[in-house]
Amino acid sequence: MNGINHKTDDNDSLREHLLGVPPVAVPVTLDDDVIRVVPVPVSANDDVESPIIAQPLEVIDDGDWDHGEVQPKAFRDCFWAILFLLQFAAVATIAVMGITNGVKHSSKWLPSDDGNTDDSTGGGDENENRHIIWFLIALLATVVAVPSALLNLLLGVFSSMLIQISLVISPVSFLVTAVVSFVTMNCPVALFSFVMCVMGVYYAVRVWHQIPFATANLQIALAAIKDNHGLWIVSYFVTFKSYVWIFLWSGALLEMLVFSPGWVYNGNYDDDGNSTDGEDVNNKLSTQGKFILLGMLLSLFWTCQVITNIFHTTIAGVVGTWWFDPAEARSSAASGNGGWCVCCGCSSAIYDSWVRSGVHSLGSIAFGSLLVGILKVLQFFVRGGRRQRDAQRRMRGIEGTDFVFCLLQFFVDHLERLVEYINVWAYVYVGLYGYDYWTAGKSVKELFKARGWDVIINDNLVDRSLSMMSLLISLITGLIGMLLGFLLLGLSGAIQAFVLGFVLGGSSCRILFGVVTSAVNTVVVCFAESPNQLKENGHDPEHFRSLVEAYRKAYPNDCGF
Image (cartoon, rainbow, N blue to C red; front, side, top):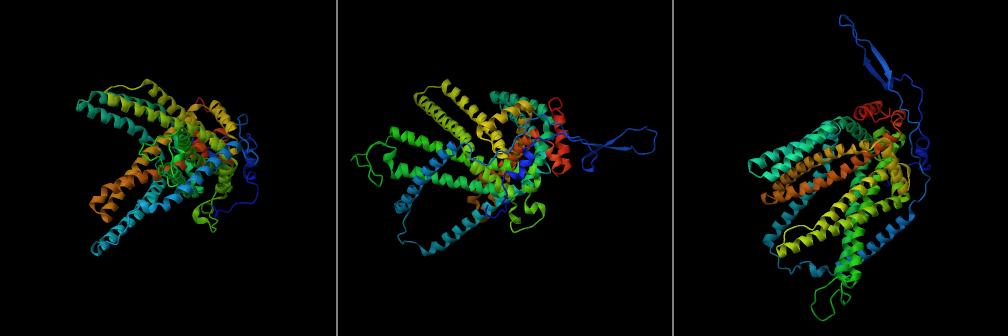
């Protein structure tokens, strides 16, 4: 982020004059940029063409709607921010100890070279290692370049078609499975597949009329990202931070389990982690150790959630700035101004939004992420307990499933999805206006009540198309990886190369599509609160026209205008 030019003015001032004052209706004027051409029918005997009447696309009367207000620059939910930083510092300190001890004792674990190398095979091993390195470099370049290219090539042009295909492919696949199962006399699978096919058809028919609205949201989100395409680079940087955190967490776990087992196990140990009890006994977790490992598990999920949600909140802030003040959220490359940072595609809005999210709103993000982290820990224990109970029953020859564990897993899974769902929209408010967590959650509830649940749930159509596209791109990267493996590693490495390319391609899609999903969610919220800003702030008038018309077709009884 050091290469980003940003203004020295107050960060809040760039949108305060737009966000702080609710938009009001203005007199309708005949503007060339916002007209609709409507043919007027004439007599069939007339030889002249139908006259054209220009009608303005009216301003939506949203004066009675609730609008968010930019909050003053301040630290919010400070307790949770401090608690998060303390746990991160504790884990990082233990991780440094574990990594240091691991380096000191590496000679015990790594194979030693006794000098008995055969010169006749040394050249072959070196050549093989060189091929492996070139294969990894080529595969990494593939999984970065191919998803990015296909996303920009397919998602913008064929977004509506992709959403339609995503709705059709599910019932069709279940229908094929039902037919094959019926032919092979697998009646239970055939019946289940047929029921799922009917449900898929019903869902597709019910939401088909919402496709134009989902497409319009997606197109506007892509336009905002295009003006700030540095977000693609930031997304990979955030993923790198997640990998660094997992490495640190693993180092801390190594220190506890190997070099300082007395923290978690019963018994006495020396400084090297060796037992001094004088007998070979099975290590058992102490009460203290159980709480420590529980805290480590919570720390893993919590920090991963914070890293991801800071990025999502940053995207919300960038897209919101683009919506209300596009001049501030347009990179040098998009505006054609040039500059030394033109290649990165970063605008000042990216830096400002990251500061608001990662510094001032860290406590709000940490609090919401902690709720999800706790539920993930509960889910981990419930699933682990269920598997252990099933294993015990299989050993005893008892069939059946514990109803209590099934009920607990159902409850925890759905509660986790609900909290994550609320967090998605609460973080949009945090990124847009800088609210604390509870105020943002309250705003989400009021938005749902005022604009309707169906409008918000519309993002499922975009998610379905992105999931289908992610699978397609993963297959493509897997096939390219298999080709590279065949050329550089031989036939024996082709299968492993396909699996590695498929997994890495899917991970790359997940990173890139996370940017798109967050941008779409922000567009939905901005349109639900202040639709006129899309028309009045110098954007392409076609964005406003397509979004309003698609919304009216999708929700004619609920749109309110």
